[in-house]
Length: 207
Image 1 (cartoon, rainbow, N blue to C red):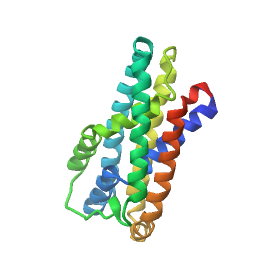
Image 2 (cartoon, one colour):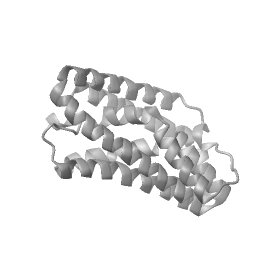
Image 3 (cartoon, one colour):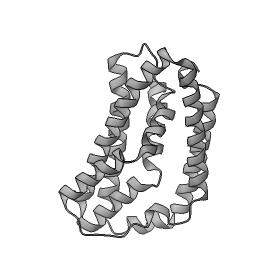
């Protein structure tokens, strides 16, 4: 995989991970309720769930491109519409949004379980991956290239939320994020709308 293409993949995965939503709220709750370790456990287990969805998507998209190219194109356009909807929703989000997460008592085991369940129980996540990975997967893609895609999504997701959990151990970080949640939502919305337009125009592999 060319470095420029991988950088595009990494940037989009990072944007998806950083977008305020239920995953961020989960890590916030467990970090504030149990400290650094439960927050990290929630982050890592969530990354495992993301990796599983990415793995399923990579192999499924490769087969779909070969057998049903028209259906694949329709799914791609549907994915673009979904990304646009996410962008509009993020743009219109309120100042607090998912960053207003109340603390609760928690444990390492509970954090790990809920981190995985939030990832696997979110059907929107697989729609995001279908829309995203349709730009990178080709029928002749090697096993190594597929593994790189899956690992990239998993490592970036886990790395971001681990940083969130570690950062929240400093009491000044959360108020700083909450004060700027409105702009985080706005920037995320613009980026998602731009990505939706790019997906609708055609795959990155062909550019």
